[in-house]
Amino acid sequence: MISLINTWKNLRKKGVMGINQRNADYILKYNNRRNYPYVDDKILTKMRAIEAGISVPEMYGIIRTEHDISKFDEIIKDHRDFVIKPAQGSGGDGIIVIADRYEKDRFKTVSGKLVLHSELEYQLSNIITGLYSLGGMRDNAIVEYRVKPDPIFKSISYEGVPDIRIIVLLGYPIMAMLRLPTRQSNGKANLHQGAIGVGVDLATGITLNGSWFNEQISRHPDTDNIVSNIQLPLWPKFIELATRCYELVDLGYIGVDLVLDKDKGPLILELNARPGLNIQIANDVGLHQRASIVEQHIAELKKANKTETVQQRIKFSMKHFSVLGGR
Ligand SMILES: Nc1ncnc2c1ncn2[C@@H]1O[C@H](COP(=O)(O)OP(=O)(O)O)[C@@H](O)[C@H]1O
Ligand SMILES: [Mg+2]
Image (tube, rainbow, N blue to C red; front, side, top):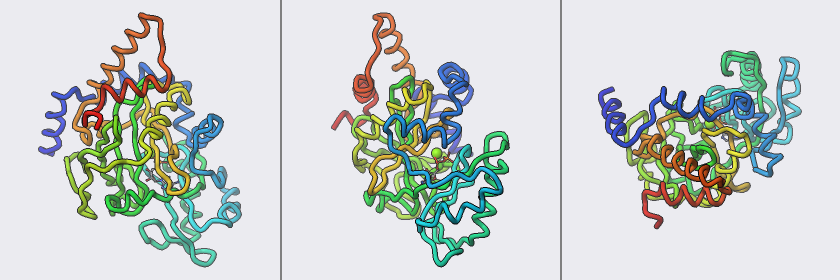
């Protein structure tokens, strides 16, 4: 607890954004409630992305009712591996990542746990009754392609798929973090599940130091490998995809989650209209400080009656938010 307070105290000096400020000055101000469904429902996000030519993990099927559960076998019949997730879930809750199957009714999760067909049916039923959805409303279960992580992550990750979170303010990327699953997080890259957050230099895509449960760390707790100074492949592509999400959902303050599939390349996993604040610990810099720079820039553009293209916005962010000096 003491170290948590110290961590946030140190960050305050660096223009940290607190939860009340995030809600009032960013989410309420820049996110039009009308557009929330496009990010809160992963099915709608996928449909929008596909229309815009942005790649996402392929959806194998949707289970909407108890009756639909009988279609599950048909949905997975051509797949040894797949993921089940609540369309309106968050924080990694309710997601099962199946890595392989034996016979008809036995499956293995990505962390090696055996799961029976009946358990998957039970999970589908829990999802549709709203166990994992915002406000406990009825939900839909998505069955989708399992992302296979790029081998670059082998040395620093532990099972599962690392993801890249990029915060985009009014179309300008302002901060990035690589999230690495741990033994504890069950193949998921959510910090609340126990994954590690590693800061990423916005200009280069080179990793910085990490954080785990609010503590700053430099090594992965399971593999003991150093997490910093790794060049993420295809970085300009990741930044471009995240930046384009501003136009995709018309929300001014979002967290974009992306993954790197070893065969399909960069994919958008999901968008968040209330992204967490721990990205500031991983990067050891405050969001408010960076957001203010963008807001000031936009105010100046407005005065001059100008707007910027995706590429101009990326250039601005890379110039102002680089910590490695554009190596
Ligand atoms: N299709 C997938 N393949 C492999 N892993 C996945 C897949 N979908 C989600 N995951 C894992 O679960 C985590 C959370 O998934 P996400 O779709 O972002 O849902 P949530 O809203 O709960 O965060 C991801 O960061 C990733 O580690
Ligand atoms: Mg997520």
